[in-house]
Length: 71
Image (tube, rainbow, N blue to C red; front, side, top):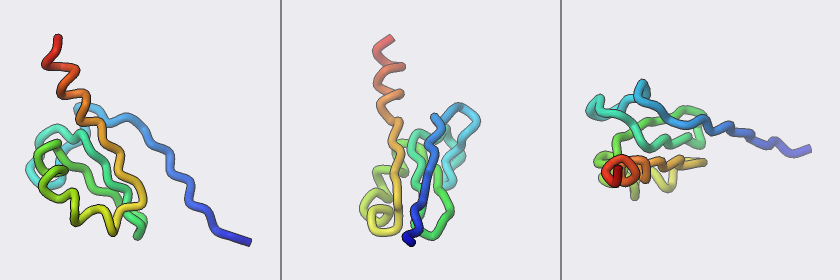
């Protein structure tokens, strides 16, 4: 028998805040250890390389920023 992790990704919204600075979060990193971190687009880019080895899933919704500026 194998253990399988099922992760449901819910869309980020304006109540989700960056764990680093408190701005609106556009990136969720679900960690292999079971926790999660939320980041604004700026801090997600800053910590991207460090997150790759410890994240099971990185949910990036930063495209929402470009969509908002195009309106």
